[in-house]
Amino acid sequence: MTGTEIALIGAALAVGLAGIGSAIGVGIVGQSAAGLVTEDPDKFGQTLLLQALPGTQGIYGLLAGFIIMQNIGVIGDELMVLSVPQGYAFLMAAIPIAIVGLVSGIYQGRVSASAVGLVAKRPEELGKGIVYAVMVETYAVLALLATIMLLFGIPLE
Image (cartoon, rainbow, N blue to C red):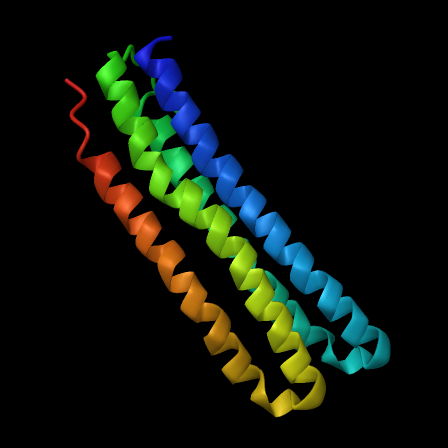
């Protein structure tokens, strides 16, 4: 396996695993939100906001994947020939957002689903439910930051 292929695996993992976490998280919230909106259609807007929150991990993974693809020439330039150590550097740089994106997307979905329950009983407390969900988001943002810092530290000469 070439270094370029290994780097592409890193991009695929960042996009794929973070995307899976978001899809699961958004699905969890969607199930709770649909139940509430069945009883009270006026709460659609509030629950849609809560459902959107776990989707950000997929965006972060996509961003990391795009950075990898741009750095190695998949986007724009000619595809670079990377050494195996360089390929592994890209793969390892993708791991923080891939793993944290997967796990935090699911857990943010669970927290957001609980916030749907909060909105069901006390709609004026939506802000508190959002804060709970955003606390999980913090770790996805930190993982994205770590991935970006690692990516920009890879020498390509």
